[in-house]
Amino acid sequence: MERGQALTEEEGAWTTFGPSALAFKESWHTPVEMTEADMDRVVAAFADAARRADRAGFDLVEVHAAHGYLLCEFLSPLSNQRTDQYGGSAENRARFPLRVAKAVRDAWPRTKALGVRFNGSDWVEGGVALEEVVAFGAAMHDLGYDYLHLTSGGNVARADIPGAEPGYQLRFAEAVKVAVPQAVVMAVGMIFDPHQAEQIVASGQADLIAIARAALDDPNWAHHAAVALGQAENLPVQYERAGKTTWPGYGRTV
Ligand SMILES: Cc1cc2nc3c(=O)[nH]c(=O)nc-3n(C[C@H](O)[C@H](O)[C@H](O)COP(=O)(O)O)c2cc1C
Image 1 (tube, rainbow, N blue to C red):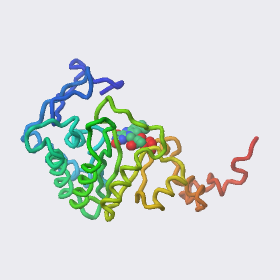
Image 2 (cartoon, helix red, strand yellow; image 1 turned 45 degrees about the horizontal axis):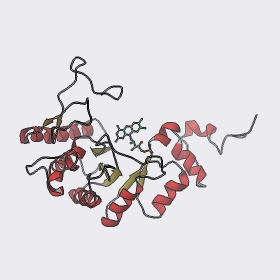
Image 3 (cartoon, rainbow, N blue to C red; image 1 turned 180 degrees about the horizontal axis):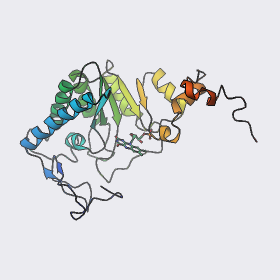
Image 4 (cartoon, rainbow, N blue to C red; image 1 turned 180 degrees about the vertical axis):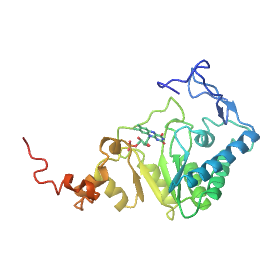
């Protein structure tokens, strides 16, 4: 994909694969419906990728089963219209993602963190149901995943996402936390205010929060959040002289 559009054949577009031959939207590639042999290949490729990530020294791996990526496409009835054992019921739609998840779990050391990101909603009528989301989260927890990261959208173009509301995806993390209290659950989506972040964790709605745009906007967000919450800024030694609390006159108007 480039400039929000699919590449043309002349531009070197790949053949894409999916659970069903359904394009994301008009003018996008129609993927080839995966065979069982394709699935075996992808399961092995995920496990190989986890082993390479370990060898390369990464401490954490998060399996992406959200936002319209392949595993998400299998989970949602909007993108998975298969009639074999990998489509239809929620249990069938989760079968391939769980095969991948197990292969990654087996390939990744228990001493390093392993999480999974998945959608709480497609934001489209007839999309993945919350009870299916909760059941998938429980299955991933049972497989030995260290945390469950709840996000949403990206699977179908016509989705109507209420993305301007602070914490708009929090309800999905909360639903999984209530149903699987022993799991570590991460919330994301329009979480930017330190007090809001603190309240989410302190109230037990989620155990962890992820921030994306707030961290791009302010790479020192965590340090500044600590100060806003009355804690030490805790900067690395090299940065201490630039700290809000150690820089005399910080914030003075000219
Ligand atoms: C520039 C940018 C790139 C992103 N890339 C990815 C990505 O590759 N994979 C992913 O799962 N989410 C991606 N996201 C979504 C974020 O992970 C996050 O879920 C979303 O921005 C909502 O959180 P926020 O309100 O804290 O930004 C991206 C977001 C931004 C702003």
